[in-house]
Amino acid sequence: MEQSETFATSLPGAVRDGIAASLAGVDAELARRYPGDPGTRQPVHTVYVPADLLTAGTVRAWGDQALAALDAHAPDPAALAAVLGLRDDLAEPVYERVRGKLEREPVEDLRVDFEDGYGPRPDAEEDAAAARAASLVAAAVADGTAPPYVGIRMKCMEAAVRDRGIRTLDIFLTGLMNAGGLPPGLLLTLPKVTYAEQVTAMARLCGEFEKAHGLPAGRIGFEIQIETTQAVLGPDGRATVARMIDAAGGRATGLHYGTFDYSASCGVSAAHQSMDHPVADHAKAVMQVAAAGTGVRLSDGSTNVLPVGTTEQVHEAWRLHHRLVRRSLARAYYQGWDMHPGHLPTRYAAVYAFYREGLPQAASRLAAYVNRAGGAGGAIADEPATARALSGYLLRGLDCG
Image (tube, rainbow, N blue to C red):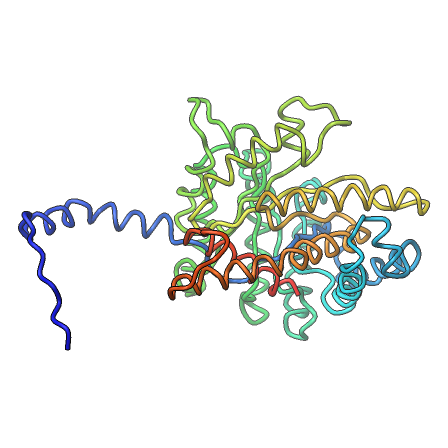
């Protein structure tokens, strides 16, 4: 057996122990604030459906309408590839996967909307809609037809609609509990956040509901919608997003960019409000840095250009949507909003092409990194952080199909 060599040192062990003690608080803070990605599946999109339009057949109807759009405007792989500019070798596998997805699981994340898509209603009407939403969601979860993720977007915490939003949330969650419990894929969205204190209030609501039903502390999380300028830059000139994540007390699951509210609040005219406008890129860059390492996921917004009308009009809208989704993916925004069934073909086409075209290089680089760790060499000297990014890329590709 080889004897380990002894090296001379100058610092006594008490020095190391003292430094460890002095940094214990920092170590704990890093672990608490930056736990890293949770490693669970992230949906590639969120579909918003106004609460009054939700039915037991909504998800299937979206899939059927998306398939009908493909049949009418891109009936085969070559046709879709020509519209979107897909590589020849990707045309057939992407097309087959898009059709299969629309038949099997057309919606990954459904948000029943009680905010802008629903608007102000008489209290009795919204009460009934919230109870009905809970009943429909519970039934879909029970019979296996629910999307992997589902929940509601309530009204915001501003004074004018605060009580209404709280009541809708309470009715919805209570309805789920009475029907058998909260589904594992439950997601809640808090819109139009301007101050961190509103996030604190939402966290308190979740905690109080958990106490009322004997649920484990922290069971209920929520997404924060970034769609006001105050959510990005506070009145004191400090960035606000990180404070909001902190104010959630570990309950923040995602940051969702609100394209049109945020653009409008910056004074961008309607014709130029888009996910790729400079004001959008600034807000999303701030969100990205604030969320990095925290386990809080990011979602881009949507386009309001709907793929409807003539084939030429549908193709034009498809090309726009496909380009925007690709752009988001390249910028590490792996989720976005889809506002119309006609957006589903290009959502999934963009996602599948993005992961499949990068698969050979990502797998090769990751294999080279692993082999190099064992003594072999490689053409690219990837760092551990890049290796983790390569792994994440491959896992996301597997998660989405």
